[in-house]
Length: 407
Ligand SMILES: Cc1cc2nc3c(=O)[nH]c(=O)nc-3n(C[C@H](O)[C@H](O)[C@H](O)COP(=O)(O)OP(=O)(O)OC[C@H]3O[C@@H](n4cnc5c(N)ncnc54)[C@H](O)[C@@H]3O)c2cc1C
Image 1 (spheres, rainbow, N blue to C red):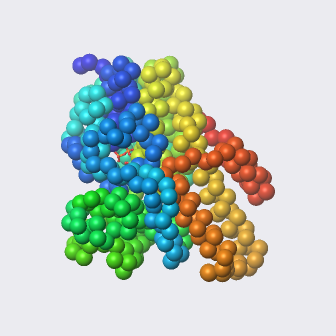
Image 2: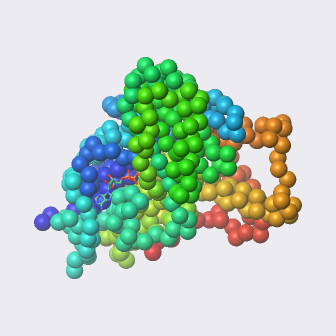
């Protein structure tokens, strides 16, 4: 049996991108996926703009359905705002199939990976294939992740979603803005959000919550809110009952430490990319962009004969570096909230309709829309300095230098 350079388990965006850049570099690479493609993947299909450069693909050359939007409709604290920013929607059913087919890798579809073994030559032996390097791209429950067992300091987030066909005229009549413009409902305590996305003759609705146990209740209340606002066609109740749930892990700096297990001589190893590592944006839970970024970075590290450099490349990439900042901002906000409420007994309640309260709600909505568009932090060094200062003031150990150790 011919020995592969790389075997990728999972043909989602992380696996197909990794395979594509390896194949481009001349590696012999195969992808194994338990599904036949095209396959349904629970996802609203929102892409932020940086993804096209990472994929080396112009959005206008992408042959599947795509919806470019320049306004995001955000409802928060009972106020609606239309915020200018830019992004895209696609349908995962088409997108993942397109990426996988164009990867140039050998495909083994409909094959579930269970046992993973290593033979006496140090080669991985999986589903009848043998390879030097093994890439885990199988999502939250990836079998390779079980092998690498990355630490998970925080639990997964819960998401409930459904994409379905509906009458395009009814969608056009009830949607909030233009075709493809997302309607986002930020939950009052900011522990999650819900969405309603018109895609011509498709609707995508759903809810995500930091605590997976809350997702069903949150979806029911979002559904009632979209319905009361008249933003859903009348005859889609049965479809709204058909949402399905899934969970995945948001970015945490500790995850990077489990990204690679490389042999001493660098000639083989096991690696995790995308959801199998847990890389989604810490607030918006955007997962496709970090999946393709990690897939590409790993491919480049292997192609450069430097697989051990993968975690460091990941931590240094601008997208992941920004996730680290968002992660630190969230941690800082949590610490400040705790300290503030301790020092003032019950904690003062902000005036619900005061000028400052309105301004802060606006800032939250605009910040979310800004993150949805994949915009980079302006002046990242200044942000890092401010976060270092906050860590010092709060007496916390600095969280700024995560390079992702190789185990
Ligand atoms: C409801 C929902 C909505 C979301 N919406 C968005 C969004 O709008 N935008 C965004 O950026 N992110 C979104 N995400 C997150 C995003 O879907 C994921 O982060 C992204 O799909 C990760 O890509 P991946 O390639 O790592 O994994 P996946 O896309 O999950 O691909 C993993 C592949 O591995 C295969 N596999 C798994 N186990 C095995 C096995 N044992 N053997 C063989 N094959 C196996 C699976 O069949 C699958 O094809 C959403 C997630 C959910 C749950």
